[in-house]
Image (tube, rainbow, N blue to C red; front, side, top):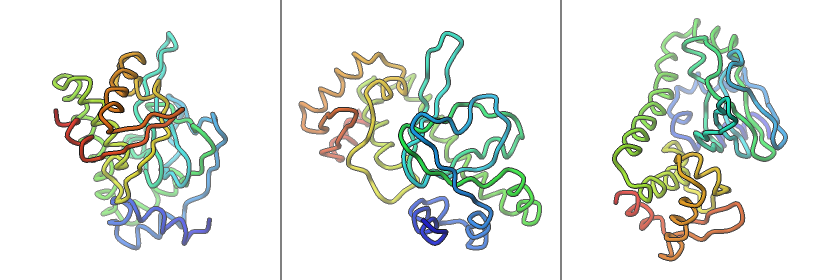
Length: 228
């Protein structure tokens, strides 16, 4: 995949597509490929800032593990998702772990190269702030749902967010490569509860459950379930 192909793939995302053209080209000009093998960590919590990333292919798990070894999965992200901007603003260590679920290819724009670019053109800071504010908005929605929505609606909403690329892509996925234990960890539910809720959706003809995957059969009814 060459830089022109990188651009075409990333331009399917709302954030990158709406950047000023010179900023798009500057990001790709400074970017380098970062291939990861299945199970390989891109970075771990506490690691120093290392730049901005975009997923080109594969799936990355963003999570945190406490001292007892319990994992909280924040999200599973795929192309054309960009991440890593928080450390760009505050210069502090990474807040979470990022690990390849399977073979994964990313673009990395190194921290110092990006800071130099922003020094040259300070107005680009606003574009990065928009990337971060979109995720902050999703976080607030998630906190609200955790307090106010039943588990069935939270599960439906998370599936909907994932098939729609967390609101940053025009294309919708039909099949999610998503083990039930990962979905349970994202929602703070037990695997048994999550399995029961998914089977209810399957019985209604909204999803089809496979080994390590969930196929969306009726996105409109899934949306209705998310608003229950």
